Image 1 (cartoon, rainbow, N blue to C red):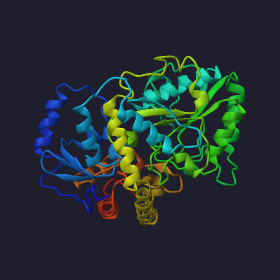
Image 2 (cartoon, rainbow, N blue to C red):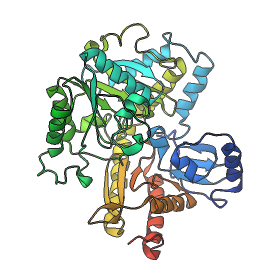
Image 3 (cartoon, one colour):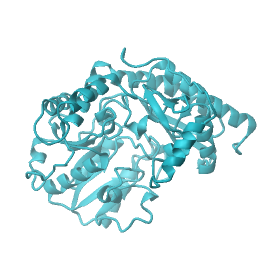
Image 4 (tube, rainbow, N blue to C red):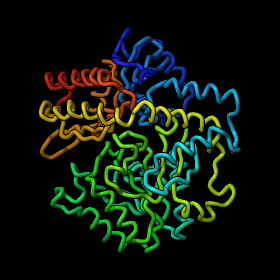
Length: 455
């Protein structure tokens, strides 16, 4: 990865947030609607530039970035290959659904690394939720059925169909949801949904889900949609036999199996696809985030037979105004080229393993760290008030942890008790160690002073 920066570290010139950031935020707050990404609002900084795993604000403070745009910045900030591809393409052609050399190459590059044999038909979009909605329409078109199954903790987007399948309380106040949406327990073994222990449970969550569908569905299930590893729930890694069991359950009900690989696809977990860890074979795959190298790009992958389903396959039946435009396609080509040529899947596996080894020691070192988990550069830490009861730390406490990380130059998702760590796939060992050193400093201070009531 000669094209990306190495050994990046924190450099602070002012208090955080600095005066220029504060002034810009005040101007923005006069007009911007509420509801922006929580971490961006809480950090209080205004960005001047960013490169690799470092973000520099308008006050000249440089932060290490362990958020990575929540998966979007998988190639790091301003990857030179993506920058050049976008610059070159925008001068030639940007919009429209006509065939372009960039789109043809993108299709061919995706087809070189299918999540399973035969899943190569790709339709393109600009957001994750848009791709998920298309996948749901495709499943209905193919099966002629009407219901869907998702899982506790799952996140597939905020549009109405995807929102109805969200496995959290985010939906409160937004009902009613789309009828025929069923949500089953996910194998989050640290917080077992059925109060058991793996592997003696025998995947009892699957058995419970089967019973629920038997009595709650109308036996008209079009598809099961599941994240191979759950992102928003806290980067939860299920046992390897869980996802194949989900696939079997889907087919038992005559439904398709949709793998939502928005976060886990393209190397994040140390394999090209999240489903590769378990060997489960999806019928449909939704993809995005790393796919565009930071440019808005998403897609739906499926087989020849399923892609022919009508009305999804009718002219304009599965299209999008921005889908497959030359500019997005060029960005996608550059991103996939970097993932392949820079060895980013291997880098995610190797650097992620080293990070996980350091973070695993936190469980013994800190009374408020209950559990550490991860695959590749997809890691999670459970911050708890009590290790025996697994009671999560309050949001007030985790917000203080987040603030202290930002003040010391580390951008994290530590504002939630299920603390997600997912830096760029381009991050090197030294930069990763520098970031963990800041996190350790914050945790050491919390333990030493009991500053926020941590015990």
